[in-house]
Image 1: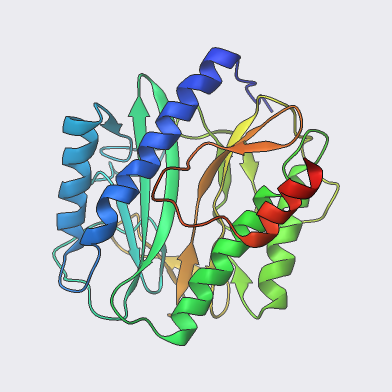
Image 2 (image 1 turned 180 degrees about the vertical axis):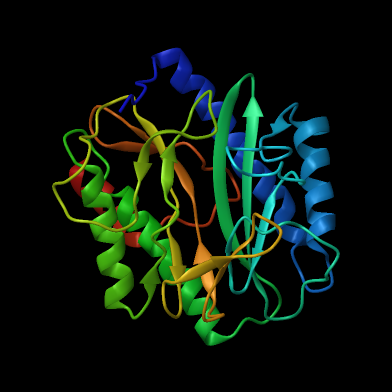
Amino acid sequence: MSITIKTGAEIDAMRVAGRLASEVLDYLTPFVKPGVTTEELDRLAHDYMVNVQGCVPAPLNYAPGGHKPYPKSICTSINHQVCHGIPNDRPLKDGDIVNIDITVIKDGWHGDTSRMFICGNGSIAAKRLCAFTYEAMWKGIAKVKPGARLGDIGHTIQTFAENNGFSVVREFCGHGIGRKFHEEPQVLHYGRPGTLEELKPGMIFTIEPMINAGKRDIKSLGDGWTIVTKDRSLSAQWEHTVLVTETGYEVLTLSAGSPPIPDFVSAAQTASA
């Protein structure tokens, strides 16, 4: 396995790309409400990335082996859609939950992040799933430091999710990122502590758990991209791009509008300072 270690200049470029990706989500936030179509959100995001940020939308026409080109600039996964939902002309309804996944390319470098949005008045169950998935992602991020193992991240996320009655999707995972959209390593959101690759300063990868309210089983729709839960239970996902530093980690996909970092993360950072 060839995991690239980024240089200082490359890390600086990734900081820019990561912040820009997060700022697309900041820009979209006020538009995500009942009545808007995901196609309209895609158009807004595309125009913002291209005309304001000078970025390239990485998903547009992305075609990994065996896939037909992805037709839009963002991914929008609603309710029981797990990931890779394709924007369309169906208006969002009150109570829908939607994951918006943004990847920009700026000066050849990728920034990748996603957030959950609740349209209007979400159910208690939907709010709980979205909140716990956000916390699960941060519990994984908090495990990142030199000498730790990828299995530590996965084990922490899996344990937290399953202890709270949720299930973790196994077929999709986080990934290394840089000049390529998807690089080594694969970052599983389940597993055993002390296993898999050792983390080293300069590694950059995403942590993006997909957590289901029901069973973890999934299936692919006929469009070749959209993944849904088999039991039609709600699914949530959050994603950040993370750098392994000399002493811990740095989240590269934070911006002014990012949701607050959980208290347990802030407390741990204060204690180690």
